Length: 505
Image (spheres, rainbow, N blue to C red):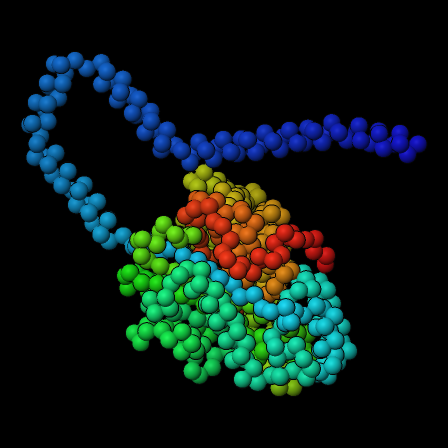
């Protein structure tokens, strides 16, 4: 009976399933045909014009050519003026266009094995320190269980042993290990002398000591005295894109030099030791990590660079009070300092992302997608929003996505909102699983994951997208200049064959 029933169900559903698949296939082919037609419309028109001119030219005789030459002689002044205008315009364009900014390489810090913090160790330590009541302990256990973090993320040295060693000296030690670890590997892989670096941008939200983190790097590597340094604090998890944007602007002003962007966070001084549940989530998600990126405006570096910076789009909603306070560092009722995350965080993140992509979309989407989007927008206005809005196919603009690994909910929302496939969000999920939320450096771990998997091909475009307190959403678009191989000492070098893994929530 069971076998017969299974057979009937399979046979009855098979025809419908095949029909649905055929309709979906036709729909896909129809959309691809439309996309290629619109995207290549200018090329097709020029080709048709060239064929028409060729046909007309083949029918011309010597008398026709003589008349054409006489006609040109009578209009020699007009032809000379038009030629001069065209040449002048091309000259101005070539002289004034911004020089390209190349990413020579990037490097992510891989902490030593003794800093690994399995969930059992984490929970054991937070129980032993005695700061949390039973409800707070259970809440952290529940968040950790559903977070998407694996068993090999890292905590700082100060939190590996009990009691915790929370101090300015311990925070400096963590900062040095992360920044210098990433930079040592970067300088070794790029073969760039630190004294050749003309611009240094460092971002770290929570830890802003004096002397600054950028000064610590200058002191460590004995950088030159006229280096232009910047230290960004309080900018949140999207600060790395801000650092890249600042470095890009500086490279446009100062030619023939290198810029280094260092992105890190400091978990030693970022822990919350109270019982307010809205402030306990960062304890469970944030882990040790950092990245360093080498940028160049030297034309000769194009041959060895991995990527070219195409666009940077920044969206800031700090003028809105809810957005400003949805991720807010403060003290709780008992004077315990931490980062408060409001319930409005995800809706605000969604609205900010929409505003960011509204600016970015026209820069990266093919004309075919823009026509569909603005057509449905116009129809919606005419019919009072009764037509379902068209969601642009972002996969026609990007081959790879580096979504800030801030947490499972962030990745889920972007996957759903942009109709991405599991492969598209795989770098973000696997980075969250392997390294946790490393703040602004997380998108660089994701880029390293794509490279380690051998998926980056010449001409591929990468969308880096991150959110930060304030509230901000920042995007960077990179284009691969060659088939990119993983850098030496990649953070995924010893474990890439194990990924992707199934993440249980």
